[in-house]
Length: 153
Image 1 (cartoon, rainbow, N blue to C red):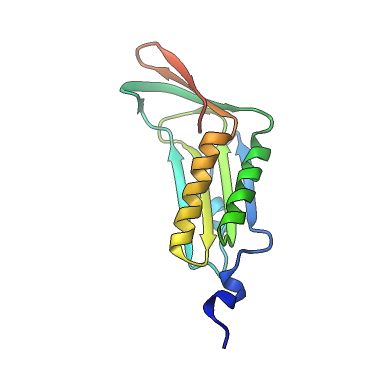
Image 2 (cartoon, rainbow, N blue to C red):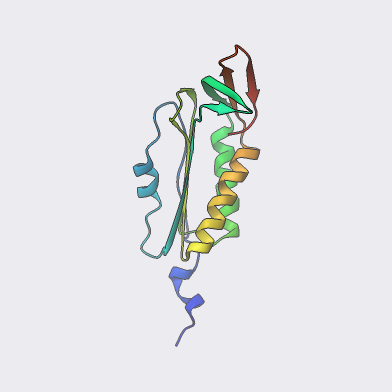
């Protein structure tokens, strides 16, 4: 009898990257969740980054995201790295650009793996690496008239 780890469902999928994108329109949780559906996945972790109404003790009035033309390729590179490190069955990541309002979805990532622990770890690695490595910039305008650029998701 084969051990659990010998079962094909315990291994990474051949092509686990299902959705990568930079969007200038509203993001869909449903689209991302559907993209990572996999019958062999026992755990799916989803992270949603939203625009908050404050940052660093100041009230945020407006916010916009912009990106370098290489941003989507960088997202794919990071997704491939995560898929190589974990037994990923399916992975999806989308990021919004343009003007956003408080409460809007800025980024949605999801990862499905055979087990929940792997899914949590892979999803955290994916969003952390996207935030630190993808050339997406946030421009915030505050209620006191000041503004700042932030080089992170």
